Length: 401
Image (cartoon, rainbow, N blue to C red; front, side, top):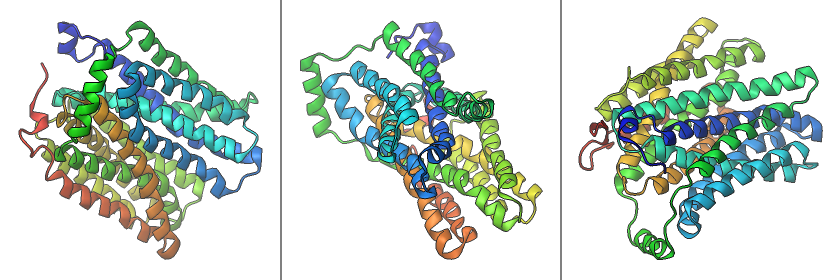
């Protein structure tokens, strides 16, 4: 994307990396803010709870579509145009979501935002996860910190706007400031798109060369660990309400300790405290923490014990996605953008499927039984971690200097 000077390479903090951190913040901000504004949209339009929930589904569907389409669109139209269109989708989707008079229009807006966020996230992953072992893990962790902090700020602005009388839309419209920052990157340093002949050569190569098995194994690992994350985010509060016997507002407050644990874990990894050359060992360590924490929450009967379990689970989950992205991108160093967009599809599928499966089991057998979905995903991801980096040299062993 942006040429890196030797000094910038050494620090891992070149201009492209800083803009990628802004991309991570934009993705986190919008993903969580859509959830925060959905109840206000429901009240405004007289929607049912199920209809309100469809907005998160539409956002996830946009992520999946971005993962499926963006690589091919970039081949045909060029990376610069596709990234500009992604920002345009967000710019169009935000006011449409605020002003739309009917459910169909708000769902269309959420899907447009999902398409834009998915594209931004794909290129963000490609930039932060470029091969570099521990440095790649640190970049991805720092991007995760930016995303988590932004995910707090967006809903807070929504609540502040609603409480002040300005309007709930304040937090959503504020996201356009981040879009301006991302647009500035395209203005300052437009990526060099391939010539027509070069694009045709890329098309032929992509038709004949599939992404390797090592990539898809790491991709599946990412599906599993994102499923763990969002399963806990969506269902921790209902579990605590029923199992510990506390009111839902209190349960929701306790459940935020999972995000606090994730923030602490990402900060530690971003500072290099948890980065490791041994990617499988790091994955198992994170999964161990996540599994123990989720297990504690599953059997907890007091708020204190449940909160401790959520903190532990969050710290473990925090390291997993950066490890999966590092392994996936290292398996296809020649096509980071293509791999990054496919990883966006993994995110969207996990958000669509995991909470739904947990909820379906909960409807039949109770939330505690549904929570076993989290434990099953931990076990499945542990098996997938066996193969991370086994096709050739472990991808986390290539340390960028």
